Structures are given as C-alpha cells and as structure tokens.
Length: 404
Ligand code: ATP
Ligand code: MG
Image (tube, rainbow, N blue to C red; front, top):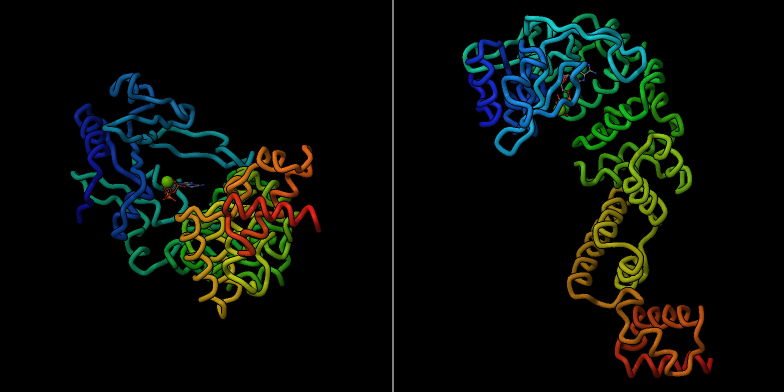
C-alpha cells in the first residue's frame, strides 16, 4: 500500500528522518488519500520536540503556532505544513484546549488520542501505513467509530460528538452503534464547548453533499436550540436540495433557519459568532426567499440585481429551487437571465441610469432628497420598460413625473 505524497510533505519527512527522528504524515491526509481524494492539507507528526524541529528547519521557515501543544507550522516550497510532536492529551475542561499535553516517543500513543479510527492512521514510505485501530477497514466498510471507549472519548471532549456527524455526513458513512449511543447519551455536554469550535463543525456538517440524514434532532437541539424539532424536520429536505460545498454555505444556512425569519436568523448566527459576511449573505436569502414565482422574470431579476450582486441572486435562485422544486425551471431561468443582464451591463441600478442628479437639477428638479426619489422612479420605469434608458427619454419622463 503506497500513498502518493505531496512533495513538500515528503521533503519534510525526509529531513526529519535524516536527523534521526520518527515522522509520519497523519490524520485527514492519510484518510483522504486512502479514499482516493486529494487532501487539502498535509499534517505531520514526529518524535522531535518543537524546539528540535525549529532548530532543524531554521527559525525563518517556522511559525510557532502552538508551541505549548507541540505544533509548529513550517513554510516549505510555497506551502504551509503543521508538524506536531507525538503527544497524549487530557480532558478539554474549558471546552477549547486540552488541559495538559504530554509529549511521547511513540506514534501509536499519538494515534490513540485521536477521535475516530479513520482519522487515526499515520504513514511514511519506510513503514507504510500505521493503523492500530482498524481505520482502513472502517474506511472500506464506511463506518465512523471512536478510537477507544466512546463514552470516555466524548467525555474528554464533547466536540467529538458533533465531529462524528460531520465526518459521517461528509463521506456518507454509517455510525458504529456503540459510538452513536454514547454520542446520544452525552450530547448535552456540547453545551460546554466553545461556540467557535461548534460553528466550525456545524459549517462543515452543512457543507456535506447530503447532510439531512445527519442533522440529528437531539444534537441540534443542543447546538441550535433556536430551531424547533418541527422546523428542523421541515427544513431537512430543503437543505439537501440546496447546492453543496463551502461556497453555498449561506444557501444551506438559509434553508435551515428560514423558519426563524430574518431577525431570528441574524440573532442565531451572531450567537454562533459567524462572520459578518456570512450573517449578511444568509439574512438576505431568508428575507428574499419569497414563496411563489414572480410575474415577470425579467423585472424580478433586474430588481434583485439592483439590490444585490450576481452571486447573491444566484444563491437565491438555488434556495428557491430547493424550496419549490416544481418551479426549478423558473429559478434556473432566473439565474441564467441574471447572469446575462449582469454581463450585458443592463440598467438595474440608479447609478446605471443615463441621467444623474445634476442632470435632474438642470432640468428643474429642486435639489435635496427629492432627487433620489425621482431617480428611483425613473429606474422603476426603465426596469418596467416604459421607456428606454436614454437621456432624452428619461428627461421627458421627468417632465411627466413632475406633471403627475
Ligand atoms: P479536514 O479535512 O476536515 O480538515 P481533518 O481530519 O484534517 O479533516 P481536523 O479537524 O483538521 O480534521 O483535525 C486533524 C486531525 O486531528 C484529525 O484527523 C484527528 O486525527 C485529530 N483531531 C482533531 N480534532 C480532534 C479532537 N477534538 N479530538 C481528537 N482528535 C482530533
Ligand atoms: Mg484538517
């Protein structure tokens, strides 16, 4: 069994081995490689202490990201690599960090502190796969299983309960029954985990291909207590019908939180300490996710483009499709039309009108807030195609507006 290793990671392993240390790539990159997926980063573990690693690689290549926990980040060939000293860890009493870590000489001890068997494998070219807990077999049969005694592992760090569903959702895996049972029994402990760690896992869970089956009612009632079981049940099929991936996270969040309304969605995402961008992008979708299909697609598309950028309009179309699959063709047309209008620079905003405030004043409109109102009225007429977006036509329309 060989893993095609990333060049930077292979060079780092080589340097550590030549200096006499044990070293492996470990965790997610081994799991993803065995699944035939391309790892997004390559983490290393080693017997070298953080100080020894820094001396070996030289201070200018090292970022001391978490020295007390044994982690150094190394710049190598344009990439960044986390190297962590083999360690065991205590409980996460504060819900954020292990109370204490002990550096240990053996990779197997390090693998034993990891959460799931599929995440507890290490690899280097000399020894091949180090897999003391049967991670490879669990990958093959599609099972998430805690390393060691599940009850104990979830008591040490309750975030693992949410990670369990996150990884199962990501790969569409089943959950080993004793592991699932311990997760259900101990899920109230998620209450003590820092909200930043929860948010990160929740976002990853929601970005999975089809997360609905893994949005467990009991777990969600702890980490997302704003959402009633009925609202969760109604949202599930909509969530799965939304596009997957990190890019579409606001669409999935909007589908999940729609029942809370715009204010409730904002409050919930603020409590979870989501970024302001994520809160805004999600809240807009919840606000605009109107049921029913607009009379004129063209007018609807242009009004939306007047308020939001193309990406948001397309996300709205995706959410609309998920909510009303029977209107999928209309939403696809909306998305396409918006793209076309945007590319053609068709007038959707006041700033795109062929006249501006100064033109209006020259035409006799009194200065002040009334100018903005007239411009908006002109835009409305242009969007409804009452007259073209041309200077003469607009000035004529101003006279009509003044007369009416
Ligand atoms: P991803 O591709 O999503 O980053 P990953 O496996 O790299 O997946 P991380 O959250 O980056 O997941 O964690 C890296 C590794 O560290 C995991 O594979 C696991 O071995 C270990 N790990 C991370 N968090 C925990 C935890 N709370 N308890 C035990 N082990 C953990
Ligand atoms: Mg990772």
